Length: 396
Image 1: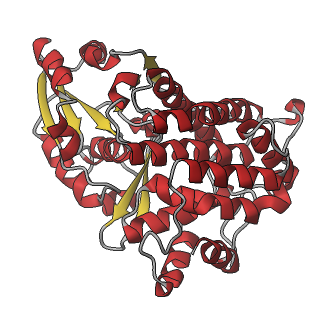
Image 2 (image 1 turned 60 degrees about the horizontal axis):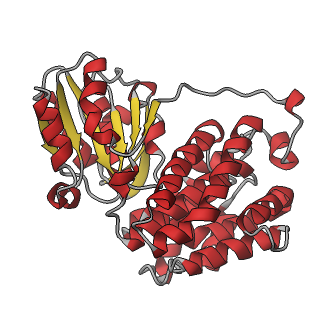
């Protein structure tokens, strides 16, 4: 049985005339971009009429000292500040539930996730769960009460895009599978993009997060939900990756490349907020949940094989991706795959599922997980069990 799919006509036509377009753009956060912007969080908190903040982050970032000047500035503004540092990579419902209990202890608070995608997703989910009874899984099966605590998102990586939208990916600890928390009320009120916070990110997460930006942009560009608005943003995000990802992996102190990647991340997210994503995420989510691998790494593992699977319905658009990634190379669908493979190799994240610890008996589990993931609904070509098996076997 094929996964659910949207609008078969759009799935086969790729580019379209603007006069034939019909699309909706959801409200976006107020985006604040400048070096040092994170030290002015108190202004945004007070603009929301709040006097307390729950900082949501992970233990490594909390211990690194990166948060210290931010916390000092908030306390100097007479704001009550608490830190929840229980976010794990690929955050679980248990992380969210612990953080929600912490938030309930604060009055009139803002949730401020600071970190990578895990902190963004966990923080937004905490804001929603704190307004609802029970567990994350119980909340997912109901119509949640809107979050009472607004969110101000502060990414320290260029990759997640979660700072711009109303969706979170949370691992269900009972099922061992990634699931979604989605609600309009958890769209951040402010997204604070401070390139200085990305300077200390080590090489490997810089590479994997950067590949996440590329995958967001490429999947938005070829999605069945793509339109003139999203295409324009996705194309610019791909250009930013092409021109800056290798630079920032080679030299993490390159503040201009860091800045370009951080803005590119937000732009790619704005594109997929309109369009949805595709089966690089649908297959990658399963791999990262089962093998506890970095999200961006699993996208690097899967994207070339998903592109190959989709080629028959999106060759023209993949040819444009090739032009953007390697302007002097062949402008063909195959050229796009070659360009992605070369980039993956250049930044040293060309790993197979075997390299990530996957054994052959995992295949059926991955396929089952992927088929349950609704992100596949906007993949340009419908995917059935055989399709998922084909892509996973190619990545093994």
